[in-house]
Length: 304
Image 1 (tube, rainbow, N blue to C red):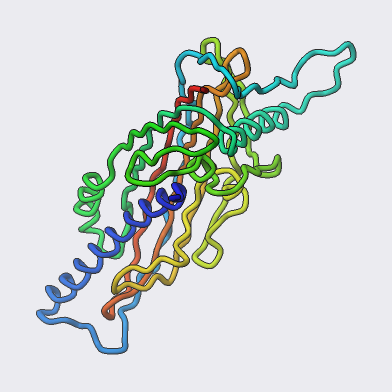
Image 2: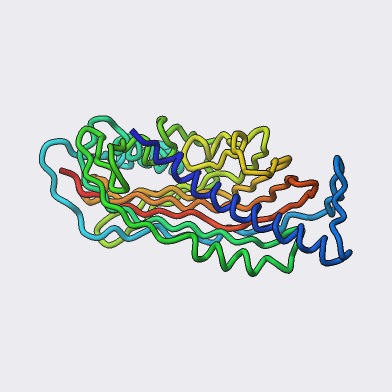
């Protein structure tokens, strides 16, 4: 079975490979053009300019509309709202309540007993915002815009397993939904904010994860790694290029689920904002690039 979380990471990694390869080509040409001949000396590298990674602000994200509720037979996805009034109500921790609904819902759709049809729309948007060869930034972004396309896929899970709509074999809902191939385990300490709002007759429960950073040596920030996608470049091999620094900022991913009035899961949503600077060398040249963008996926879920 294929690991969909790894496939998402590979797509982002492919973006960086395109950036790195094109930057290296333009670096070499720029060096040759400036001096009439290459200034590369065996065993040495050029000095990398000191740069400041641009600060990015995560856009306000609105949880998706998932359409009408679906009737179910057999296994259902009932989630009980814990806000029922009592004669002597205790103070309600709304963040804890919303996180429990999100956690229970994601664990249910990742379960090996999950039976549902899922319609997924995924978008990845990445741009090179700074580099050691700034005059090629627009050229590289033009290549990236042609390289990254919207992905629309349909799945039919029985006991958590579906045929792979992208090829042969099967995939599991556990590997498809973040975090890949492990349980959703986000805790209150990892939640920056939580919100519950109506969407027609349905209710959308959403949490925003606390801002975190990662490095080449420590690529998986703990709270995002517990509930969202992360990008690990620690074992990536890029032809003729060696990565020496990869610093990513995660301003705070949004995870949301939509429940019908009957408490059945009708939708899932992730918006992962990310920015970062990578530095590496190849063919005697050192260079850097700073990217900014997001990955977003929306699921409509129909229980069988």
